[in-house]
Length: 107
Image 1 (cartoon, rainbow, N blue to C red):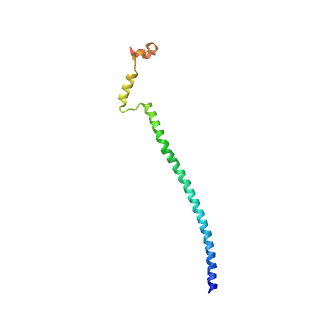
Image 2: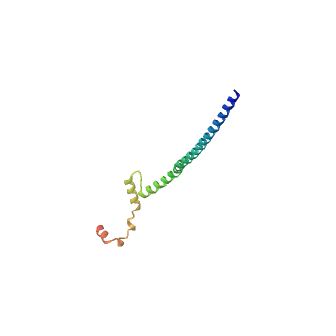
Image 3: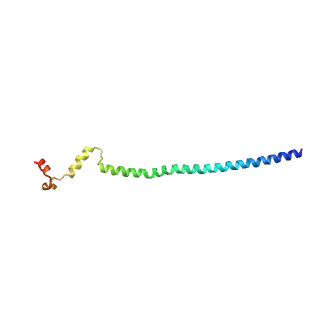
């Protein structure tokens, strides 16, 4: 009876060693899967975070530049009238420097 128990214990020990080798391989695989998962997560989240930080500033500067360039306001026609009236000084026009076509149009 003791011999049978010893034989079963030896067989159990061999099986445990084999299972340990398999589990060690699985642990190694799971470790590298976690590492690569973290790297992928970093590669995905980094551009999103950087974009969330810098893009609003970039777009606000861009829209400010274009709104100044295109002279946008609440009422574009009113803006044109106001800007042209404030910039128009008839006394500063030199009639001698005008082209002949423009002179003919004025007369």
